[in-house]
Length: 343
Image (cartoon, rainbow, N blue to C red; front, side, top):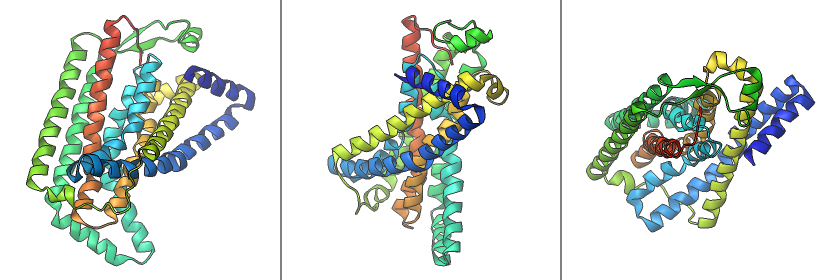
């Protein structure tokens, strides 16, 4: 089904012309970024928070809120693996860095600028005071998020630098075959096991650190704002499906761009264009749910909600690291079964 959609997108380029197609592609990307993903995210996160509070108690609510925003990364990777490509694995890896600059820089700067424009200087002062008062909490979340970036990109560096170029399969990689291009394949030797070990260690360490904070400051998890959280499993499913469909469309668009403009994009993104698109643009798109969660919680100007806002980077990165571990483990299992899987 994805390949059919990709072929339709490629055919659209030949019918409309390059520049019209590029304009349509940008329009689709804007709709994904600012309409489809934000709306479905609000629906999903709202009911995820309510369900978490009802089923597991308030202590698990913050982690569940932020983990639920990682559904697009999981879907992007899963769809890619279903296409027998590892390129989607780069999506949660790229989101590790995107979460840091979006939640720690873009979100607070955006709030400050909008409050100043609206004449709400008192809110800016309260936010600055809150951050100064809770600077240890801020440093903890920043350290956790950056630790995940190091672990995830360390694993990616191992897999990327030990990749090899092989001849493409004529049926699956018809465009590359026709152009005489080679295909980059990830390593399946000791490098893969070392990368798996790095991800396992990263996830375990982050879980231990998170459990320690929860023991020291339980009020951060019990006193967060939840007055407007719904608890409908059906609406949570609708929001989740909406995000997955958006991610499915994004995958098809990236694959079509790879086939149409792979030579040009390769000069910027490297040989593995499909993975590069996921790492840069895809990661930015799928990190927008975390940004919306962060903005909403920063605005409440309380310590527990500040913890949730900062967790949009740190806890989300923990979840992304676990998704990366799952993706690499699945890749290992598929290669053991004899499935060839290029970037």
